[in-house]
Amino acid sequence: MTAKRVPYRFSVNDYDRLIEFGILTENSNVELIRGEIVSKMSIGDLHVQCVDILNRLLIRGVGDDAIISIQNPIRLSDSEPEPDVVVKAVSAKGKPSASDILLIIEVAESSLEYDREVKLPLYAENGIREFWIVNLIDGCLEVYRQPQSNGMYANMQTLRAGESINPLELPALTLPVALLL
Amino acid sequence: MTAKRVPYRFSVNDYERLIEVGILTENSNVELIRGEIVSKMPIGDPHIACVNRLTRLLVRAVGDEAITSIQNPIKLKDSEPEPDVVLLMPRMDDYANGKATLAEILLVIEVADTSLEYDREIKLALYAENGIREFWIVNLIDGCLEVYRQPNSDGTYAEMLALGGSETVEPLLLKSFVISVSSMF
Image (cartoon, rainbow over all chains, first blue to last red; front, side):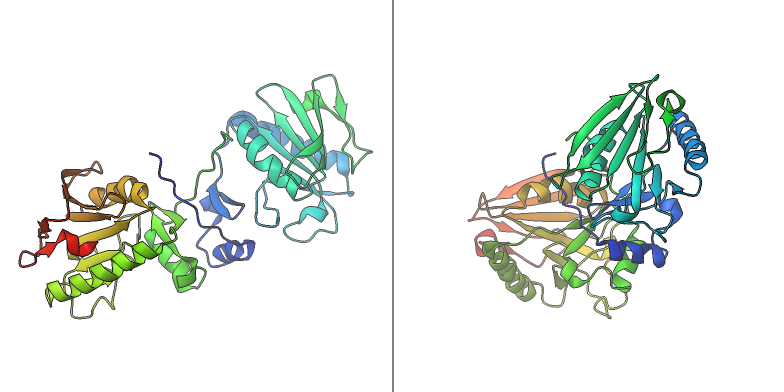
């Protein structure tokens, strides 16, 4: 097969209308990526466990300084992805946009390539200031900072058990990497 | 890039609701292929001219035995493609009360220049699987008419003929009608 189907691209507004009209529901398990409505990957036990740990650590760690939003949509220019964890400003109402977002975290087991190749450029292009991939395959935390409009992050660090991390926008919070893996 | 995005698949009913509520319009220029909403390929002048010729030939040739429907959707199991030409059984309402379904479809024709691969690989398999009894590709690249008959549920046609300019063709389901291949080009 060499012939390609070119997917139709929905605007964020039309995507929201699909939800409003009930054509897409919570059970559809989709997200909008660059105008394409795509099915979300199925999630394994390790992934679930890691998101739960992050949720607990972050809620305890940030107190009232930020809101922890788990597997909820965010609104970008032509996309509504649903990151595993979003740390957003307390002032953000509803679906946050890039300027409301302090940190995005994806937990990657089977989704590692997808998170690096599809999600990362999307977040960088939209100016998400800090993006983490909890890489369960290699047992490390990938920290991306300084988003560029060409879809890259200028600064990338790989942290392992024994090290700790302070989010740029929440410098008072220290998370030992070992707790995440 | 090796990571793949898995497209969400819409049901035919949901697809029709998208049209009904105006999220998809005629200007969206899409069709539903196996649950995926895909953009239709842009059409070049030779393609337009061939569809115009076929329209004229077919309307004259079939008389009242069939309805010639041009670039309109048909309703299949998980798809609503918009073939270039469909010959339909006559129906009193001219299909005002619903799109044609399999039993009403006598012949599907695609005109292919840039879309040849797409028509042979994606459309052909879809039509065969759905039991479309006869499918033609007017192949503008090689200057021939490809005739496919005897659909199999595995997405192939058991019978395939490539007809050249001096030959004629009779649709299986419209016996009174003979058309010369050269008149299509």
